[in-house]
Length: 148
Image (cartoon, rainbow, N blue to C red; front, side, top):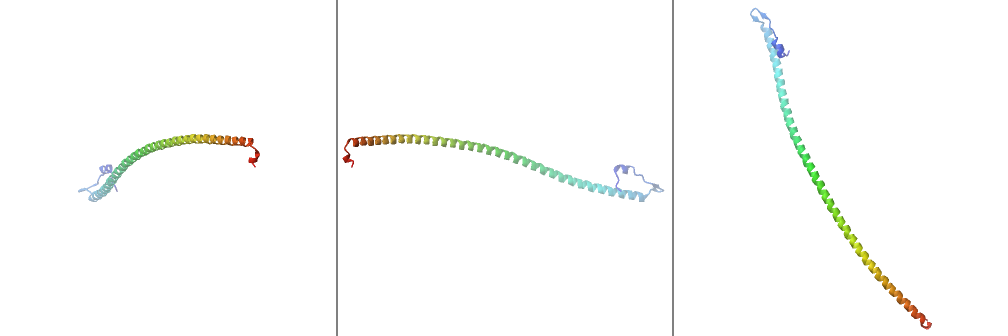
């Protein structure tokens, strides 16, 4: 039987002629020793468990610190990547606008060149038609014998 401290304070032994009855005292002491041993082992087990839990807690705190650091680093890297991507996109867009302006300038220059070429060809065709008309008029004024 396990004794509590309060129960031990209230244990009373029967007295015999020569004092306490040794068998009852010995049995009570044995029960107290067993109870004390049980409590002592449980206390040692609890101390070991506490030590293990404290080590686990320390490990978890270190892991938490590492995770926080990793998260902070990842967030920082993500912000840097976003900023880099924005700058890269702005550069690509700027280059695309410059290329579009160049293509537009080239197209306008080509249009002007083609317009001038068209004008020149029209002038040549007009001159050729005038020459044909003049030749037709000259041929109409001449006798038909030459035509046959």
